[in-house]
Structures are given as C-alpha cells and as structure tokens.
Length: 261
Image (cartoon, rainbow, N blue to C red):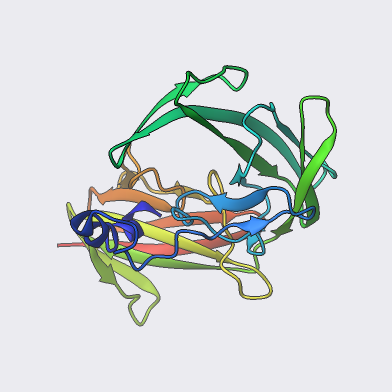
C-alpha cells in the first residue's frame, strides 16, 4: 500500500540515488524458461514482490514482465481460465543517456527509436483470479509462440484481520467487542487477508468489500486512501450503534461500532 512507501521514500529522495536506499528494488523472479523476469506489482508490492507469494482468489493481481525483446510484441494468457484469466498491455520507451542524464519518450511496441536512442519494453498483465489453485501465466510472442511462463498461486482466504483507526489513532475493541468512536471522527478500517498457510494474500483490486450497514450512524466517505483497495474510510455521523461487514472471497467478518460523545 502506498502509505507504506512513505516511511521509505523520504530517505530515498533525500539521497537522490537508488544505491543510497536500503530497499531491495529487484524483487523479480526468472520465468520457467529463464528468458523473462516476473514480479507482482500493486499497492502491497510497490517495489515488486516475488511470484512465489500467494494471491487472493476473487480479486485482481498485477504482474510486471521485463527482460523483453524490444522488437517483439507480446501477449499473455493463462492455462486454466477457471482459476484466472489474463489481460495484458505492452509499454515501450525510447531513451537517451547524455552526461549522466536519462531522457525517455513513450513509443508504440512496433515503433523504432531514433539514432542514439535505446528502446526498452515492459509487459503489464492483470490477472483476474476466480478460484483457488495453481495456474500458469504464459507470455507469447507476436506469432503466438510460447516464450516464458510463471505459476500464480491463487488461494481462498482463511481469516481476515482488521485494524480500526479513528483520526489516525488505532482503536482497540472494548471488553464487549465493540469499537467506540467519537462523534464526527473519521474512521479508517484496514483489512489484511491471510491464507490457510498464514500468508498475507496479495491483491491489486476489488479484493476486500466493505459495507456500512447503518450509514446514518457511520457512513462511508467518497474517497479511498491513496487508492488502497483494502482500506475503507467512513465518518461517525450520529450517536448510536452501527455494524460494518467486511468480505474477502469466501470469508466475512462483522465489526460492531458505537458512536459516543
């Protein structure tokens, strides 16, 4: 999630170099054929996640594929559509390197770069996961010939863990299991999803669905935290009790709230 980056980014910006940053920027993995490099992308993987991580069933997950031949147009497909389907988009740039400065411009995959420019391309794939299981993501060239592949481990959620914050301060459940929130305060609910092997399941979009049952008491705000799909934001609007239901895949959790003065 983007807010996690903010603990790291100021150090990197201040240093003005990747070498000065203590973050591993190479969280990619070789494909089955060893020709391409794969990594998961998205809010939990801003700097890349290795593809041996488990991903959430019933959600979207982004994959970045690199080490491409810049003169080839690529596409992607999955081997088992009942587990996941794939859509892809290839992005290319022409870059010049002069006096330590790099300048680049976007081009179409079939375009040629000018003299002195270097072309590079990346394939962006979105997996729409549907059911649990292991599925191959295959990358094909322009003639629909197999180039390389990776295995996506799609898993159903085993448990949900939600953290509640009010005005950016974490709130603990009371002895009665109810979260007490001050009137007019903002409410932030972040939910992590874990598999049966206790791995934090990755997803890029629509993995967690949050429903405010009593919007007169606590209702949603019409924005998201930095585009996060696992964080819901609401406001305590009136005194009283309210419930919030959280669903991820086949798992559902209900949270009880009480708005007080």
